Length: 396
Image 1 (tube, rainbow, N blue to C red):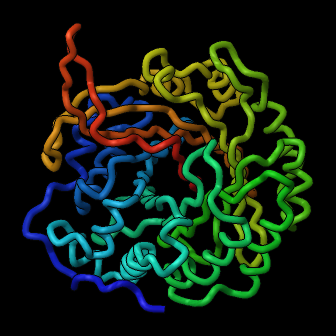
Image 2 (cartoon, one colour):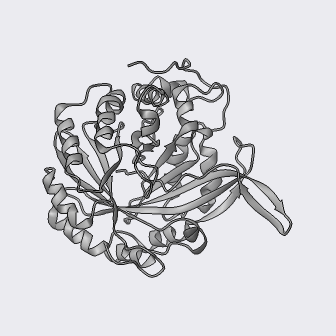
Image 3 (cartoon, rainbow, N blue to C red):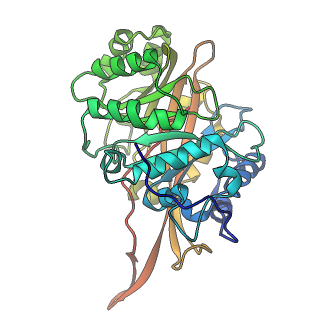
């Protein structure tokens, strides 16, 4: 298998860096969720990347007291993969990144992703790059990589679950890990997909390259809550069933006031490797769209449950309530001014063996440029680029 021709590694003479995008939205960041020290670490990573790499980013915020860690995640689609693959003749990654073995794998993957002779082009909608920031970032920060097979929470899948497994086994993982997939991991991957109840889907999968890479995270949607326990048992999960049951009973509930749908698990995250690991993620989605931008987060009562359970401080809950909105900004790497949209996308509850339940919130922002169009009755904002449908990474 041969990757598409790529340009040689280069160090761009000058380019606008991604930290300037984050600096522009910094005034809207709730300090209870993103304290100055955490923001400094985000800026230290984004300062090493071109601003044109992404329009869509997440900040993963811990909600417990005395846990200020904030990780950063970027969505990479058509523009970004050109840059990473070395096929943008003006903008590129710094040479020190491209010379790192893990980044070489990411670069090779993006080249394969663009190859029309391979199945990746239409099968993978985008990838996520996640940077863990539990300490000062290194000179060459290494991200986790997640491939997204689905276009959004409610968009139809384009390929079968068995095809997704083949792509992961034969292309994605060998390139990113720089070795064949171990037989045990293949077995657990296959079992995790084959035991899905009807209608459930594998939506994303990824490896945390900056950590031990002996496990793969599989992210499933449309898995009925009354099937979750039986499903996990069927694939060999030996985690705490009592804690899982208690968590579901506490946080899954009918639609709270102001919300149209019940609060239920939107995504189930499972880690597989030589075994099925005990960690499980339960992701609860907020109702986003213009309603959240204008009216705020409708799930306040549900967030109050997190506070009552000791999983979130009142200050961080209040920070979540103040984040949504929109603003206008001018970015140095964009010709047109931009509108920046801010949402609270979801909260993840992680059951980790030997630890108390962990809650994390995902703040996302997306910017797109616009032009002012003048009508007879005044001015309106006219889109010049399309906004992707609801996205979300499934992360640690």
